[in-house]
Length: 372
Image 1 (cartoon, rainbow, N blue to C red):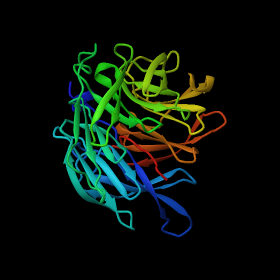
Image 2: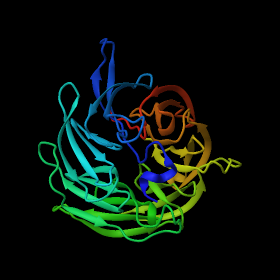
Image 3: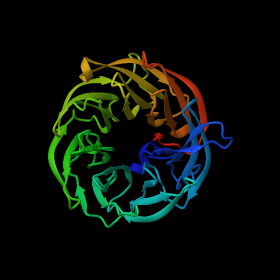
């Protein structure tokens, strides 16, 4: 089954909302410029990269405009005044943009990823890396001095399969991210129940150094590191589990797994964990449950070596994909794909518990993240 047909969903993949500081219109205080990922090829989707404002004092998000003409920008990252978006299509691409003083992005150029349906991006040592989900590959592009992208320097093709005949008929790269040391790059492969470790050389080529195998049928989607860098938490899409893994010098060792759902949770509709994030102080982890439509709150124990489920809070929408904590750790935002809204939760930093305090409409919001 291809990525686009998964669940017959309104939109697929993961998008990212990135931000930079701007002055409020009334001069009353600083707000945060926001850029939203969406889908342009689905009914009810956006017309390009959404533009909005986030208020870090209240957690309120307001959509104010769009940068049209960027196809299926389902995942966007920003660094300073530069933005990079996937073009999640069969002929996959990545688009580079720069922002002027008004914060409005303009396209610099677009490059092919050499694969199908890129769904995740990461900047690493002067290169942009992208994960092609449907074709199971990782592309590397150099970043030019003007912020644009050069021609592809590498395309790593993953191999293998898993026990799920519909979702694991082949490799499916779902996330690519540098480790906390900045030395290694990890690639999460849903299709083969694996996480691969690579090193990137000065020519922009990847060399595999290790592979971690999860339990069969797990379907790893995303992972997040504990601030210590010694542990990682892997969200498994296909069996509603999260795995605690130790990590050292590029070697990931999966350990215990636990359910992302509370005991006695209904088995229908089927649940698909999506994003996992960790608080800056390393005391709590959060995971979005699509189907159960909740955010699971975990207490981090044993200095990062264990997780304990605290609660699963209703997300206030349908099919939450990406979640993020703002810079201060005061609010968590969840992008609810099938209900067209982004919900905001106040975080009790003593207990980790969440309380919904807001909701904003957006066209097929598949992910949200805040930079400022």
